[in-house]
Image (tube, rainbow, N blue to C red; front, side, top):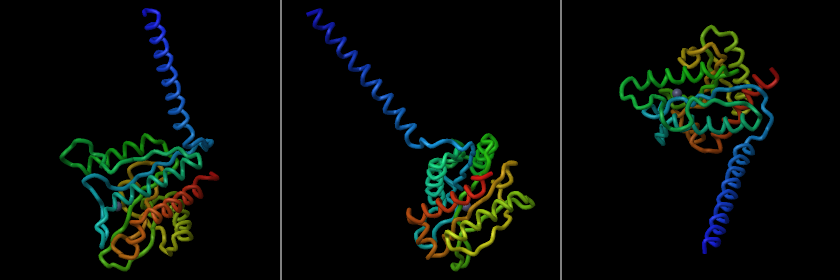
Length: 230
Ligand SMILES: [Zn+2]
């Protein structure tokens, strides 16, 4: 009986070891196989605008929150960049804002946290993702913004805008914009307004995952145009 028990214990022990090794192997392979492409040594911060209590602008017919569309585009963009070997830092990966448990000054805390993440990233490029809104319901097209007075920002924004123009069919021009995220660090930064949620025909596109992926791929192509051969 004692020997039998012992043997059974040994067998159970071996089984546990085998399962653990198997599981570790599975986890490791899953973790590495997702993006087993050579790293190209470039880091991009993707900043999905708004989140949590701050939904940003809303869709004129569906009331969709800009924050959700921004996140969805940001996630696809991350995937495209990782597939190409870029390192990616997301300012947020969930629908939550970045103000933690605080009940006061949420917006200020959120922006301070984005600034902290961006400064610590030492990234080659910061790309902030937003959706636009306008009082009239006839505005269309993605538009890229850069920090006022930044020649480097302007150049990069124009490169991004020309890719978006070719892929998303817009004739808008890159423009300087007084946005916190563009000026909160010394890192090269652009802000992409992906389209107008105040215009029903563009809202109709922006709420679909197919168009969100199309926008993400266009931004990815813009980033690779800016950084790929640098
Ligand atoms: Zn926004």
